[in-house]
Image (cartoon, rainbow, N blue to C red; front, side, top):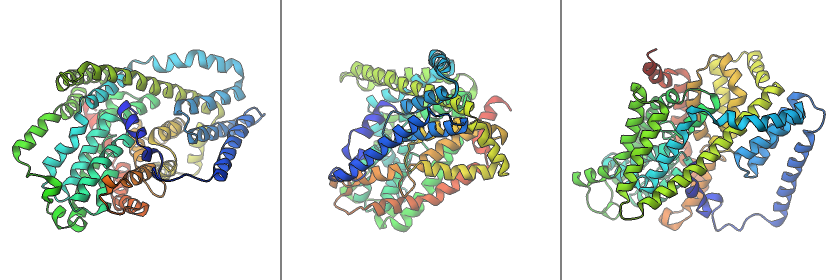
Length: 506
């Protein structure tokens, strides 16, 4: 998660507490029970790792300990590294632990392909500091307001742009919920349509380059970053297009006469939007689509490698920030973006070290190969396995964010993916989309609770009562289309692999 997303997600009290800021919290007795059970789980699991157990049991206990630590809100990198090292110690003793700590950090991050990570993070932070991300929503509204459900469509497409440069669905959702939901409610939209448009807005953004999630997956799966980014283009555009169509259909049926006609009251919209307003608005955000086109076309044509494309994008973002913020703290904005980049890159690289440590430990235990053998014994083909993983990701999304879900599952699944001849480039797209979908899926999707907490603010709900049931119903409205997208990805993998294959000349 980049700095703006992290700050955005962490700043509001409601975003941390699904019940909202006015909830007093659980009773003291319940708190002590939860604390006691958690402490017992950590202590018991850790102690069990020092017992003479079979390798598979050691690997399973290490994974359980990792999940408990993640539940305790420990940073993902630490939550992965500690169990991995304890597991290595239980399997091979301190010499291998010492060897791992001595060699693994450098081997894992001293990789030229990972040099694109700081470039993309710096680009996103610079655009945020320049104020461009805040303008995307208003521009989308001006250009798409004529459509049935135009505000919701604008919210959906603005979310794609925000998510692609911020790297955080939580941050994107919070920003759009604060801005978009009250505007749509003022315009007469059904509250469930307004909420649903925000919920699904970040889904295509994590697939469209530049996507930090796809870059991280490429580092975990050890696939080329350039082709992995290109693989997200087709599915990302497909997701955005299908949800746009669904929003338009919903608006005509449920948004109310004004919103369905693409018009809203003067109080909600102000003066009529002219073509001059649209062009001026577009001029405020042109660097964002330009950078996306620059990255995609540069990598597709072979003019840029992924790292070179990231460097050019970061340079253009730097110039844009200096021009957009001239006379109002431009260099301060650059310094803040640079500082945030260092912190973000450090966190991601630390996490990649933890992933590799966990992967090596699981290889020693035989769990990864054992899972591949289990799939073979169950006679699961490619489709059956992917449908099973769809369910697994939805379950994991009840208590984990997309990034921990991905770094937990990919090391275990690598042998199975190769055995079933599943393209690693394609699976990166599938894993990222499923991770994003899982965190919005009822009954306990993380983003659903975050949106509910935001809608408790009177400035957001506009005096209308919005319950948790309303949020869940909004999500379920869009779930059929999400299922269709998932099935299309599974049965037509060429949607993801076509552009990388075309770029490589295959």
